[in-house]
Amino acid sequence: MLKKLQDEMRQNSLEKIKENNKRIDELELQLINATNEKDELKKRLADEKEKLLAQNAINKLKIEEENLALGSIKNTDIGIMIQKKKRSETKEYLTKEERKQMEDTFDLFMPSFKEKLWSVYDITNRELNVCMLIKLGCKPADMACLLGCTPSAISKIRIRLYKKFFNKPGSAEDWDRFILSL
Image 1 (cartoon, rainbow, N blue to C red):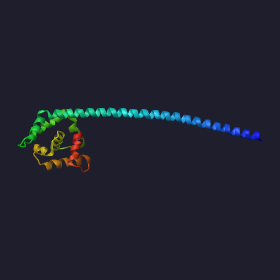
Image 2 (image 1 turned 90 degrees about the horizontal axis):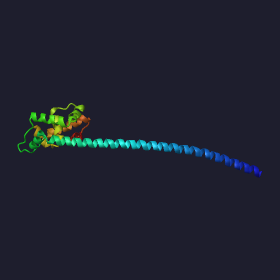
Image 3 (image 1 turned 45 degrees about the horizontal axis):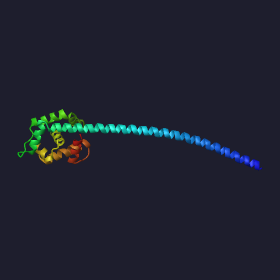
C-alpha cells in the first residue's frame, strides 16, 4: 500500500513536471515572440522618429527660406518704398503700378504665396494686397493708409477672408496668424 501510494505520488509528480515543462516551453515561446514584437516595435518607433526628425529639418529649412524671401522682399525697391510710405506724414497711397510691383515681387520671391491663397478661394486684388501687406508686417492702420481705405475696412476684409477660408467665424488677428504661417 505504501509502495502504491509512493508510486502514485511519483506518477503525479512526474505528470506535474511534464505539465510544468510544457508550460515552460509555451512561456519561452511567448517570450521569444514578445522579444521579436518588442524589437519590431522598437524598429518602427525608431523609423518614425527618424521621419519626424527629417520633417523637422525640412520645416526648419522652409522657415529659413521664407525668412530670407521676406527679407529680400523688404529690401527691394517696392519694399523700401512701402516702409517709407508707412512712415510718411502725408499718408501716401500705393499706386496701381506700385501694387502690381508688390505682387510681382511676391511672385518672384515667394511664388507659392498667391497660389496657396488662390487654391482655396479666388481672392480679389484688394484682398491679395491686404494679405501681402500682412505678410510684410504692416499694421492695419498702415494698410488702410497704403490702400486708401479705413482701418475698419481692413479689419472687415480680414474677418471676411477668415470666414471664407475656414467656414467659421474668426477674428482679424486669426487671419493675420494664418497669413503669417504661409
